[in-house]
Image (cartoon, rainbow, N blue to C red):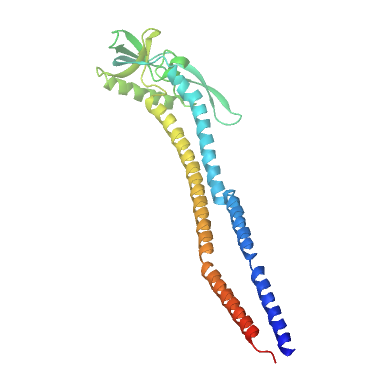
Length: 287
């Protein structure tokens, strides 16, 4: 009877061992679930939010591009449009014929403060030149504005209360032209529209147009490069994180294999021992 009880207890222990062996199988499903969680985390990483530094860099880039467009708009209206519609397009050589101060001074007004206004006069310097392109005599002006304000004078000096100071400045310019007598210099004219007037310098020349187009373009490309570099760094960091996660998953799936093999060998050893014990018990003589 005692041997039968021992057999029953050993059979019960064997059944418990088999149940425990089969109950260890759901661990694989847990690993699958963990792998699915890894896929979800990788999907979340694709929706990564940029940090504060990248946001500021993006804001700086878009601000630079917006300001460059605004500069293009303002400079195009104020400088580029008058340059394109300028009538003083023909360049020629001029020679000084005569430079005199006219007897009649021109009236002007000046301001000396917030509520201070006064009336004064300035001398009119008239310069006559010979235009080599047409061979005609014309009146020389400093720029386009001088032609529009007073078509008889070379330039419009700053209106001041002290007339002697203004006269000294005009005399210096007259002496400069007298020293430059019979020396040709560059001037601009429009023979078809205003043959009687020529100008010495253009208010907006090609160098001014170059700077008006160069700096806004440089700012536009600078802002676009900042935005592009931030986007590139975000993309590269995302690829790096995805690569790191995939390598972690691969290492995690490779390293547990020796443990699983050891557990299998242990289970096989236990089953072999249980079978040997059961055979020994069956072959043992009953008392």
